[in-house]
Structures are given as structure tokens and as C-alpha cells.
Amino acid sequence: MTDVEARTEGAAGPVFAYAPAPESRDIVHLDAEYGLFIGGEFRPAATGRTFTTVDPATEEPLASVAEAGGGDVDRAVAAARAAYEGGWGKMRGRERAKYLFRIARIIQERARELAVLESLDNGKPIRESRDVDVPLAAAHFFYYAGWADKLEYAGFGPSPRPLGVAGQVIPWNFPLLMAAWKLAPALAAGNTCVLKPAETTPLSALFLAQICQEADLPPGAVNVVTGAGATGAAVVAHPGVDKVAFTGSTEVGKEIRRTVAGSRKRLTLELGGKAANVVFEDAPIDQAIEGIVNGIFFNQGHVCCAGSRLLVHEPVAELVVDRLRQRLATLRLGDPLDKNTDIGAVNSAEQLAKIRRLADAGSEEGAERWSPRCTLPERGFWFPPTVFTGVSQSHRIAREEIFGPVLSVLTFRTPAEAVAKANNTPYGLSAGVWTEKGSLILWMAQHLEAGVVWANTYNRFDPASPFGGYQESGFGREGGRHGLEAYLDV
Ligand code: NAP
Ligand code: MG
Image 1 (cartoon, rainbow, N blue to C red):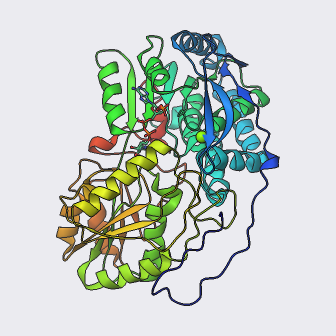
Image 2: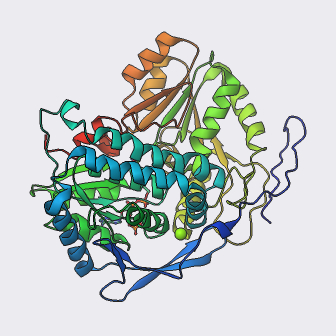
Image 3: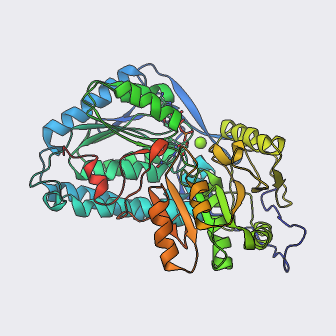
């Protein structure tokens, strides 16, 4: 059931059978119940309400988690305020740095536990949580720990001040990594935090809360309030919050912007995307194929900067699509805890329904749908890697964010046409360019309206590099020196 064999017509050479290589789930200890993390302690919600988080690969319940109501959010904001005024906001940068370094090191020490926990709660392959999510989360804490005592050299004036209490709401696609992206710069700059993880993936943020305890972080500097959208809305609207940082859908981002309009709250929004991955005829094709696969099938396509629109130069379009199909036939879909798995489970039934709806719209509107032959596990939420060819710009699958393993292929004849098509979107988070020609890379990067443009690579992240969007992909930058600005009074 878990070792699904993906084979297809025309696959080049033999497809190797892999023996199962599951990571043991025993290395992570799951509590039956998790409380809210407020003022340095775990406690149940005042109303006693809870919800269940499940393993999307099996639909098995993992744990019961407290659902924070308005009163709990009040207490969390009050705890964050007290911690801010009681010391964290005034502490010398080099003292704050010590805590951040400690958190980073504990993440590294407990990396295996965290990777398994993340794959269980989210459905992503262990190979990705182990090699990407967890190391990058640690790297973010290391990186911002380094800034904590150097804020006056960051280019924001001689003594930049923190903002106060940050209310931070994050999505389910990179639960731990998004928590790190939010907490590390905020804490380094001297703010305290109230973090709201996504309802379907609360466990790694709560694990991180335990790490904060283990690191002796002053109580209240980090608070985690679990719950659904209403909890997030309460954090955003709370009058005691000085800064709102949100990562999620454009729809909710717009609602948040309306909520904070007219208040003195600072706001940064990291929203959706519909990135173009542009392949020119002179591109190194084998590398480009790997980049296309990484661009859209990494993390089941649940990636805001996913290269969901492939723009291929007409002379190589057929070749690229053929090679892509051959490569997709070798991807292994199944048990997220198996170290050989390339494609894990879709995070929720709701997200699966959305992917199905949009993929069906692609077929109905006349695009040609293709997936490698692949048996999906019976339980859990699964969607096969899917490629649409014959896609036109008016198709919904070329315009709307699917947030799943679905690629739309379009073609172009000239660089100008590639740019026009790539920019024909309300989003503007990322783009990819594949060519041997350096001048073309620079020209494309100048003309593509996207926060990040990758050249001959895709989905490459580094904490020192700023990330963020144009247009409906949001505003503000996370990562790098730029990421500090969002948490300083400048
Ligand atoms: P979402 O529905 O917007 O949810 C994001 C977070 O906001 C979740 O914690 C959610 O809680 C909470 N929330 C929901 N309604 C809210 C409200 N009215 N007020 C305050 N908070 C609210 O997005 P999603 O479907 O989980 O995530 C996918 C989206 O995130 C995609 O569009 C993707 O592109 C975007 N994303 C962007 C980036 C980036 O850096 N630009 C990174 C990752 C994802 P619940 O989960 O409990 O509903
Ligand atoms: Mg879950």
C-alpha cells in the first residue's frame, strides 16, 4: 500500500523497486493532549475546548489540542506584553542572542524527532522534513541570533527599537519553518510573540514551545495559541498587538488588512503565488527537468512559491514534456515516513477537494491531463503528480493557485512573450529562469515582477536571503537583513 510503484508508458530504462525504508515513529513522543503555551507554561483553553489533529497519510488521530478562545488570546497577549516590558524588550542584544543560539542548537539536537513529528502531522516526506524544513528552521535561529547584538549596524539607524508584541499567524505547509521565520527575527529584534499555527499542523509549533522552555527563554517571550481561523482573527484584532505578521492565503490576507486598517499596527503579508518557471531552448535540459520537478512536486506542491506554470520555449517544448513525463514516472508516492518517498500526502481533506476541483476545471476547459500510472493508498489524502499540456492563459489552472502537485505547461517563442506571460498574474512571489546565457538571466530577472527569481535552480532558500512578494503575493520581506525591518520601529 505504501510502496506505490509509479510506472508509465515510455519510461526510459527500468524503474527500480525500492525496499521500504521507514523512519521509526517511536523516536517522537506524542502526548495525548496538548495545551496552549502561555507565559512559559502549557495550560488548557479556558473554555476547555479542543480539536484533533490527524495524520493525513492515514487519517489516524494524533493528538487532542487546546482551542484558544478570545480570553486565552487576551492572556497570551498580556503574557507577551509583560515579558516585553519585564525584560526582553530591554535586554542587551548579546543576551537575547544567547537564547536564540540555544534554541537553534536544541532544534539541531532534536532534529530527528522534529522531522518525524512534522511528517506525521503534515504528510510531507521525511526526506524533505529531515533535509529541508528542520535544518532551515535551525539555520534561521542561528542567523538571527547573529543579528541580535548588531542591530545598530543593520542600516536602520544608530539604535533601532523593537515594536513590542507581535501577533503571528502561519499556514500548514511548512509548520516549523514558518514558525522559525516568524519567531527568530522578532525575538532577535527584541519583540515578544503570540504565534497561531494552522489548525491541521499545530504539533511542531508546540514542540518548539517545549524547546523554548528547555532553552530557559524568559516566560512570555514566545506564546503559542492553537486553534482555527477564529483564533487567528482574535490575535490579529487584539488591541494589545503592535505588529501583525501573516503567512497564508491572499483571501485571508485581504481580510487581515481590513482588520488592521486605521490602527497603528504594523503589518507584513506573505501570501499566495502562481510562479512561472521559464525554460529556454539553450537550457541544460536534464537540470531543468530536475528543477521543474522540484519546483512543483516538492512538498506535494503545497508551496507558495511553487513553479506551477511551466513556460517552455517552443523549439524544446515537446522534448521537455517527454523528459518530464519520464522523470515523473520514477517518483515514488506513499508513506511519508519512508526515506525513499518523493511525494507524500496532501495535508487535509479540504485541500484535496480544492486540488481535485481545480484539476477537473483544467480538463473541462480543454487542457490535456496526464499523470504517471500510480496507485494511491486507500486511506488518507492523496493526489498523483499531474501535468496539464495545451494550457492557455485564460484557463483557471493557469491563473488560480492550486497549491497541489499540478503543473500547467504553456509555451512561448520570444523572451518578451515569456515575460508577458509570466507577469500575467495578480501574484508576484517567485519565478525561475533556465538558460545558459547570463545576459538573458539578468534581462529576465529585471523584467519579471516577482520577489525572488531563481536562475538555473528552484526553491533554494537561505536565511540570509530576503523573501517576499509583489502585488497580491503580499508585502514585506522575511529573511536576511530585510527581515529585521519588519520588527523594528523604522
Ligand atoms: P489560510 O487559510 O489563509 O490560513 C493561514 C493561517 O491563517 C492559518 O493559521 C489559518 O488558521 C489562519 N486564518 C484563517 N482565517 C483567518 C482569519 N480570518 N484571520 C486570521 N487568521 C486566519 O491559508 P492556508 O490555506 O492555510 O495556506 C495556504 C496559503 O498560504 C496559500 O495561498 C499559500 O500560497 C500561502 N502561503 C504563502 C507563503 C508565503 O511566504 N508567501 C508561505 C506559505 C503559504 P486555520 O489553519 O486554522 O484555518
Ligand atoms: Mg495534522
